[in-house]
Length: 449
Ligand code: U2F
Image (cartoon, rainbow, N blue to C red; front, side, top):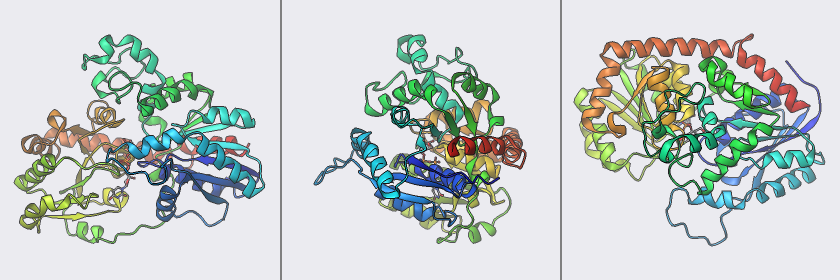
């Protein structure tokens, strides 16, 4: 389907974690289907450089990157707090984006016809209303986690003691009876409710019902109850993913030779490990995890992003040089589709889960923060396609048990079957007549006006 209308879509990206990349992937898809639309992609210089170098956009020249202020004052000395750059960015919003929109309009000579933003940016509702254009928001995580933010006020007033009893369940929300208070992201009912990030998510939940459409990197068949409920609360809910299947990358780089290394292994025999783009487990947990892999003699491929910590594993690596391989970056999508991978040890970030489903690989989850504990719960208790590590942290014994469960037990066989079914549904959703393909056509109509 191709749309010939003209227009100017301004896109507002969240520059941290894996947020800007799926948004740019969606923009790439929209721009290929609507070559006469112009897209201005507003993002920080650092994030723009990263995503535009990684994601190869079809060359029709209608996407333009615009750098916006990252909120870091000149001469600022960072304290080392992991959320510092995020909070500086949030403090500078929404002025950064308002200025960015003015520049994009001036430079292109085109007035804005649609605002497409990361769902985090609740103020886009007002910006779009002032310009008299539709606001389309993209939620880059699971449908269940957006539901939590839409119901934050109800959760706060219903859970006793602000969720201090961590085992209370969210049985008063459709589709959430298996979710416990302890699975909720910080800032919903526990943690610092007044932190800038918590306030942003709370505002998002309150303002999203005004959005013309909410797009998601997911597919309807993954959870009908939650999605039907979202449809009853929002104007338009469009699952247009999983993006990794709907618009798979045309090429990939494998500088560390992961794929040829995987080729040497038996089917479903090895563990792939990666903890996303933000965090690295503590030294104690890293050691426990390494010892468990060594004790179980499980071959492993480990994408280890923090080069300052890799020397902690020097001795382990010497002992396991024939068993495993550690790389600074892997082509994860292709790795998870490789027949040799039998389990994915993950932090349960949404993109990782989505890619594991596409590859049909069961997971061992060690969630850290945000939506990750919720995702871990979905994986273990709802979809039954993996397991969380015992006690929520890596210990040698707990990790060995989880490896046994996935590789040797009947439960592991069931997980493989269940994830195979989900994989099939995901593929059907992005096929010609699939739900995500139909939703994408609707999204295209909304965006092109
Ligand atoms: C934030 O998640 P992260 O960025 O930490 O993690 P993921 O959502 O799992 O995304 C990681 C992406 O990086 C890719 C991988 C995923 O697409 O394929 N990647 C890779 O290609 N090679 C590597 O060696 C390592 C990673 C946040 F922390 C989560 O809680 C959210 O769920 C998520 C989405 O909003 O964003």
